[in-house]
Amino acid sequence: MGQVWRKVRLFLEAIKFEHTVFALPFALMGVLFASPAMPEARALGWILVAMVSARTSAMAFNRIADLRYDALNPRTRTRALPAGLLTVQQMAIALILSNLLFLYSAWQLNWLCFVLSPVALFVILFYSYTKRFTPLSHYWLGLSLGIAPSATWIAVRGTLELPPLFLTLGVALWVAGFDILYSLQDYEFDRAHGLRSLPETLGKAGAISVSRLSHALCIVCFGAFGWVMGAGWVYYLGVSLAGLALAYEQSLVKPDDLSKLNLAFFTMNGYVSIGLFGFSLLDRVLG
Image 1: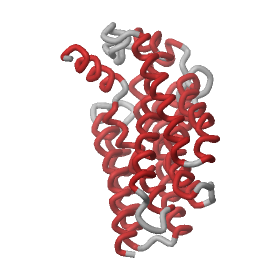
Image 2 (image 1 turned 90 degrees about the vertical axis):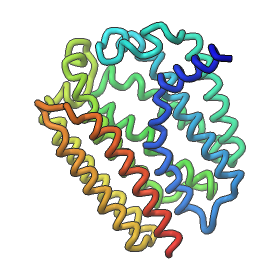
Image 3 (image 1 turned 30 degrees about the horizontal axis):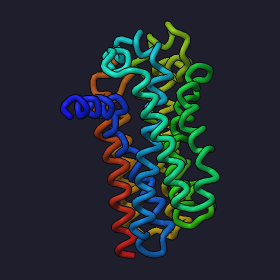
């Protein structure tokens, strides 16, 4: 059992399981605003299973697809697969199981969720190849996380409508903005190995400018979502604080100084997602 638990811990570390916190609060916002009342426990449970299994699938596939590059990159060569702590077969088994669990959870939610589930899998899995041919891969990653609130809206209402698309676009821009910053640390590696990113294409300063624009637009989208949903002042307070957090995040990263990148990436983005969900929940309770 000790060996099994060690492998489980290695796998969870390999897929950065704790980063589920980035997308999950926005998925729950989709549930929150799509529901006229508190959602059923059963539906909420299957939504959580779908979210976790989809992200697990995406990360497991990414680790397999990027193995060759991860083994060459000094920043990633200590990851479980390139270091030989896990095998490709073990990661592939986890990928298959998580795919099946995601499809089953979509089936348990409603017919439209099940029909669209292969589309969702394509979006989140294909991201792993986008860096081979386009510097806009950051925005494909953004879409991969951004579809979460629209997906949970469908899970609750059984139909896709206009309002969650504002939230989807906002999340996509938010993720792309911080992924551009994160990719700055691989600037030299990407250029040397033919991988595409905005820093590789525009240079570090140009990429940071695009990241800042993306974050500014994401706040506009969050505000637009609140407007179409008739949200109250508490929600807009949360959006304003999210904007301040992103402004502070951007101030931490400079073309010639990436020493505070982890603080910008992990801490501030956790505050943005969890904080905006918290203010949304409070707004709904008070409204």
